Length: 101
Image (cartoon, rainbow, N blue to C red; front, side, top):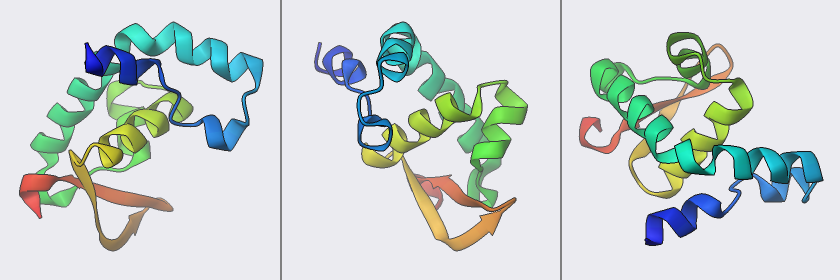
């Protein structure tokens, strides 16, 4: 129940300032956020300490950049992924699953 409520929250609200199209997009994907995070987590586990980037998620899972960015932000917020130091690839931060620190 709590996770379903959290998925109604738009983690990017601060960035887009409540633009109606962004709010509508958040409502459309709310029911699939958990599934997307699970797919991203599987990819993160497969990549292990090498990590993954926003562009990896976009290319390998076919998730739009803006949607992938929001899911990665949620996973960072929830402590599932962490940033791998200052490492960057393709101008993106590199994220690893917490166990892979």
